[in-house]
Length: 133
Image (cartoon, rainbow, N blue to C red):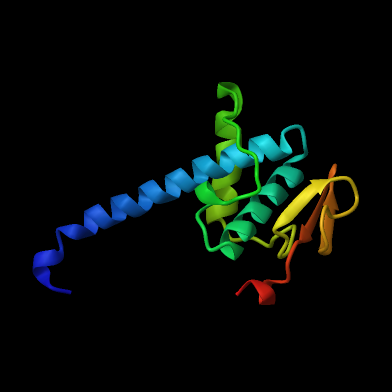
């Protein structure tokens, strides 16, 4: 790297941190809106399926389509933000595999492969990943 460009390293790092923080805040809003009242497993499942959907749509979590968003109450904001950060940055096995969609009930809203039912939600792959690329 050209030594004259070293001054950009902190700027790039700060920019990456801001993007990560924004993604976590956006994800916490989705988790709150879509899984409020569900178990921690249900909240994590919703987070993981949202991340899968963003990857499949080649989009940021803040721009992913087909989800509801709602700012958590102040007393719950840290809880949902912690779930979002864990789902985004901690690498542990997915509870929903490749699911990118969910709805209440026991059947997918559209054609898709059911991966898991958790609490009041069924998690499924709406479109095979091979067809999305």
